[in-house]
Amino acid sequence: MTTIKTTQSVYQQLRGHLTELKLADAAEALPGILDQAQAEDWTLTHALERLLAIEVTATEKRRLAGRFRFANLPTGATLENFDHDAASGIDPHLLAELGTCRFLENATNVLLIGPPGVGKTHIATGLGHAAINAGYRVYFTSAADLAARCHRAAIEGKWSTMMRFFAGPTLLIIDELGYLPLPAEAASALFQVINQRYLKTSIVITTNRPVGAWGEILGDTTVAAAMLDRLLHRSVVVPLDGASYRLRNHHAAAEEIRRATTGTNLG
Ligand code: ADP
Ligand code: MG
Image (cartoon, rainbow, N blue to C red):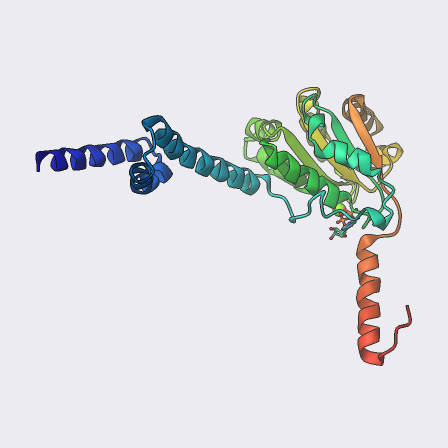
């Protein structure tokens, strides 16, 4: 009777310790592990390893989900579902190499340059996806959004907080530079973000404008030159071309409708 009571209270204490230490998954798995340990005659070491492995797996899963939530990726696009037959002009080997995330180890930047619809955002998002899975902190934003947030932060006296925020992630993805011309103040915010990450952490930028036209986008050739200097110093420039994948899908959809309505295949 006493032993049963003692066993029960030790069990309750152990559960209490796990809960106190916020090891909720281990606490929940405890009875099952103890039963299994007894049934299969596990050693104490084996049982403890199994119990903590459950907590470690759950923690990793939570962290991964947290990194995905934080990253703000616009779609579920991955490098794996990038279609190489779509003639985007990108070397599959280069893409595979970027996908290993080794470029993050020495703060290399990646510039994806090309006309609309060729897969720039898809690849940038895919790189973000790969980096998150590899354990890195990633943040995705558009150039316009970054500029707007810096502008607001300046007004609210939170400039340095904002700068720290954009310095934080190991990979910062800035999408759609050049779609809208940036006011001088925005260009200078962008420059500061790039400058403080320079040689420390990577940036992936997508743009529809060749680097020669950045003076126009930024409304100031000096800022553009300084920005490019930092960005290109250690970088991989990936030019993309070919037909727009977006339009290709439109063509395919239009063809589908035509076939459905006329019953003929004109393709
Ligand atoms: P961009 O940013 O260059 O304008 P996106 O990356 O947004 O183009 O691509 C437009 C759409 O086409 C997206 O839905 C994207 O996932 C898809 N897409 C583009 N290129 C490819 C490709 N090579 N393989 C698969 N999907 C692609
Ligand atoms: Mg895009």
